[in-house]
Image 1 (tube, helix red, strand yellow):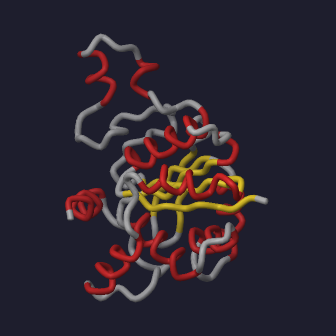
Image 2 (cartoon, helix red, strand yellow; image 1 turned 90 degrees about the horizontal axis):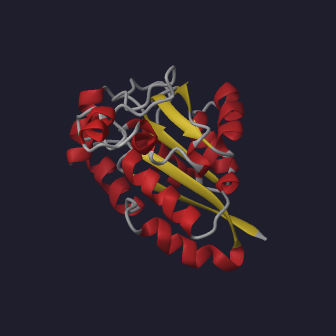
Length: 202
């Protein structure tokens, strides 16, 4: 039997590290999926490159060249689950970069789910509707979501792997609600790059 573990991260860089940790823990990349907000343009789909994957405001290619590293080192994370990254627009979220098994579910959900593609995809993957709405809102505000299908016997161990740098979902929900948020709105205006940066600093 398998179960799906899903966590929210403040940035793609943190989600990428979580994916690497899962792969290091012997989770097949075919069982890992990542969705990440791309409002800041850290991923260039046409070139298949990561101009600013660590979100530090500097072009990673220039940083790598300064350190004597090749372009292969810049992408450093484009192995395993991250090799199939693609860009798509999600109602209420804006541009996201997505890879893994969740993409097929997301594409189908995005086409017809009144609650929004991300919420529909996550609930189909076994996430409660309340948590799915918080994940979707976190994604809208510049975050990233990692989902992994794992064997039941490994679930507790792998949850601790994902928990290392993930957002505490109850705390994030409380913070959103304190600011007046009620639920994810697929008709909401996506966050700009500046709004996403400000949200991450909070």
